[in-house]
Amino acid sequence: MRRVAVVALLATVSMSLVPAVAQAASPVGPWNPVGSDRARPLDESQGLATIVRPNETIIRYTGIGTIPAGVSSRGWNHVGDPGAGHGYYVEPYQRDDRGAKLFRVQAPNNQWSEYTHALESWEATNNSFSAVSPDGQWMVAGEWGTMSRLLVHPMPGIRFTTPGQNLPLAGQIRLDRPVRDVQGCDFTSPTQLLCPSDDPDGSLFGIKKPLLQVDLASPLNGSDVAGKVTALGQLPLESGCSGDFEVEGIDYDERDGTLRVVVLSPSICLLFDSKTWRFRK
Image 1 (cartoon, rainbow, N blue to C red):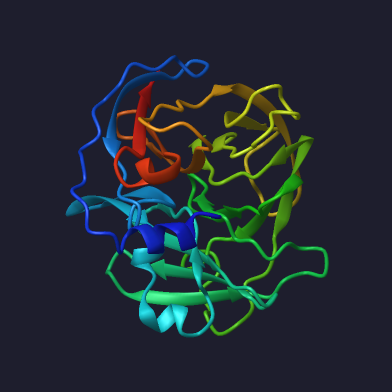
Image 2 (tube, helix red, strand yellow):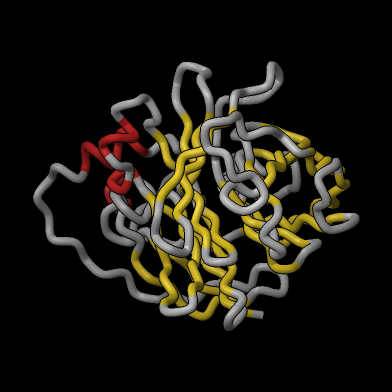
């Protein structure tokens, strides 16, 4: 999230981009790295989602360069890690004035709709990601910072179908311990999410930049549910530059069990060797 201005500046520099090469990396819990692809800083830096439809399957990324002009001109200037399920695709947007959050939804027929959520008094402005539950009925969203919750909404376009009305909260995932700077989440089952954390100091779990596993007490049902958080290990931090990496969005492709996580490289290497890491069990 903090890289948006830097990306825009660096992108104006005329340089020859060097393709990233898959590198050896350590397993993250039960997830074994099987390779990586270069993540472009302008349009692949925030996250990704696999959209499965009857006639096509698309892996779609987000970044500052993917925000439509008609969206940014209305104040929504940051897009987070998208989610997808049952042929629907959801992009989460935020703004700087504590206005509503925006969820931009594309239906299986390619038509777009916009759903806005007015912030609760206790809710953070940040709209870091969206994750669609396996049954397609619920959408999980998250906030930047140190939090003990994830937010649950009725899935826009499926369970909630009135774009002109406020998209309400349906409940919360009450985490058994705090998490910090969660940049994305995706479901691997009805009762499990994986979430990359951009935690810069490791004080919560003893690990910087961890991959977190959240096990739910039950599938989402429109009310609060407990979530047990486990840190599986540090995500790969490999680059030709030293400095601060930024862990971004995540996607789990249920077709073949591939987990993808975006990790942005430090400094000028942001342009050269930022990666989408691929994992499998």
